[in-house]
Length: 368
Image (cartoon, rainbow, N blue to C red):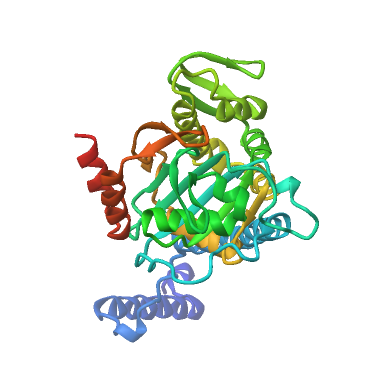
């Protein structure tokens, strides 16, 4: 009779049978390739880079929106400052026949004087002194440069309705409209806009820009200020003395207009410098300082001025080209006035170049 321990129990037999069945099932499952739809799905990979890009884009969009709003507020402030502070010359242009405009180009007559504060309360544009500085700014149609031409204040010209006289007498006799008419007749070009600034504006503008660097052709002293040959860093008072002095020079007004051109180049360079463009407060103050001393024609409002500035956004400091209308000596009038004679041949070719918007070629031919 077999030992009891050698006889398998019913429980052991059932366990063994179940284990064998499970092993066979596992073997059969391992031998079959699961169908695609039975494959376990892999967990979806997260995309941290994409999320970062989206977050950055959203952040940039937010920053751009904020900057756009700030920019709009800033420009709006400039517009209000300019339009509020400046004066408007109601009848800036002469009546009657005028030269045709130059397609795409702009001619802006700049008048520097001391007379704006002296006008009577009724706004009589004929009152006041003579224009001490007269410049024509020509902006070509392709906006590749800005040309600034000085007209000698003692240039002997025909003043409509008054005959031969110094060109600055036109301002004394007929204010801005007669000055515009005289220049249009002299050069046979349309003046599109006119801006008059008193010399105190030069002082305030210089201080608002934080100073201006000018290059003087010679050393001289004027109104308590000493200037050296070469670069000079000027504050407002120094700038005013620099642009007004003429008695310190042997050629008097000839050097003075060159100094005025040097000052305008200095303003242009300072206005386009990083130190100005990155300081909105300085830009705001410069606009306000200039506007307080400025009178313009009705069409030269802030939107027009800023539109012109935007069209010149590609212009750099070296693209301001300054020169003086050619002269041919001097003379004395029958009543004893000493005047400057203009070169009539150069005047005609200059007028043609302005009308054809081709000053580069004229300047190149004149400098050779």
